[in-house]
Amino acid sequence: MKVIPNTNDFRAWATIDLGALLLNFAKARSYCPSANVVAVVKANAYGHGVLAIAQTLRRQLRPSDCFGVASIDEAMELRGAGFHEPILLLEGVFSESQLTQAVANGLHLVVHSLFQLNMLTEFLAEHAEVDPVCVWLKVDTGMHRLGFAEKEFIQAWQGLKQHPQVAKIVFMSHFACADDAASDMSERQLSHFQSVLDAAEVPHESREISFAASSGIQLWPQAHYQWLRPGIMLYGGTAVAGENAVERGIAPVMTLRAKLIAVKTVAAGESVGYGASYVCPHEQRIGVISIGYGDGYPRRMPQGTPVIVNCKTNAGVLQRRVALCGRVSMDMITVDLSECLEAQVGDEVILWGEGLPADEIARHCNTIAYELFCQITARVHFVYS
Image 1 (cartoon, rainbow, N blue to C red):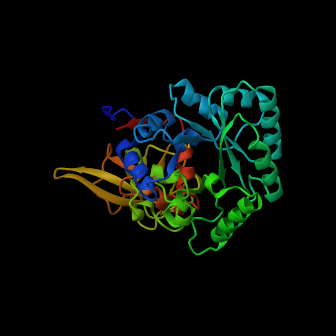
Image 2: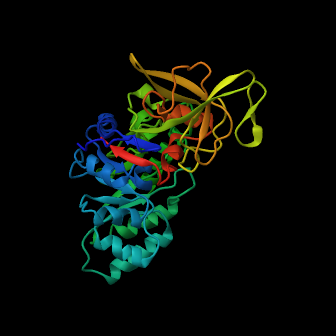
Image 3: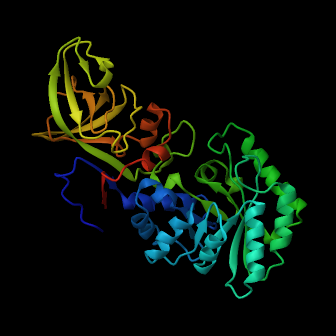
């Protein structure tokens, strides 16, 4: 365990609870203990710091599990840091040089288009000596983003199964509306997926399938198959529409923190912040907090969004929810402390995380926790424990 540094000199920092990460991974696997797991660490592990996250997750990976990333650059960052576990390129490769690099480094390849299929088959024909390649064939079952239509899939399957260098083929797809249990879209996608495999005459004993990401894992057990692909649920965000992750026993991993750096009294009728968009309806105690959109706290966050102030008192720390007032600026936000007389300069503030789910904050600005996590900027210190 890393020792938590003294945060007195930090103006904004994120604490990353690696124990919560492991609990969330175990939670994901518990939905189908026999399945393999793709631990998705793309986008710098959803903004949490990929090397620390991958180092922690590898403790619970089985030999048959793998990491999932979006790009060759993300994969090579892991390889360069000494990660030898299987890595799946979720978008595949986009050039012959990337393909050469991927094969040389033993990366698993998603193939989702005729362009990728043709590039791979030509490469295999010209390089009979390469190590066996694991291919994940993606079927477009209705999301219409990536994946083969039925006729293209049949062509891909029939071609790749003839190549001795193809060690294994996993069949995959992706839900469009898995977070909505009331939608019939997921049922239709699952049915279409099976019909495509049947039309291609894929033997049932050869059907190694991956369909369920975080929302599919939680809401669609019929989609668990042989591979789970947990992403946001590893990091403490919800994958179910209208819920907070904590309601499903998923723990927050990132807690974003800053400090109360000024407290002042503003008279009734006076405005606070840029654009004079907030006018005090009565004399108010206003607090200034050391975080803004330059740190990744969204500028569009509306007035009334809650933050937690950890007020230091003689009796200990008292947690109080207070509301944002005025516009978010680059380096600061302002909050109404009228009902929080205990707050004082130097108190720690929680923007989301422990006691304040990121999902709740995301809904205030009409986004999702994924975006909040991913847009944290480099000037925020990260503290792992």
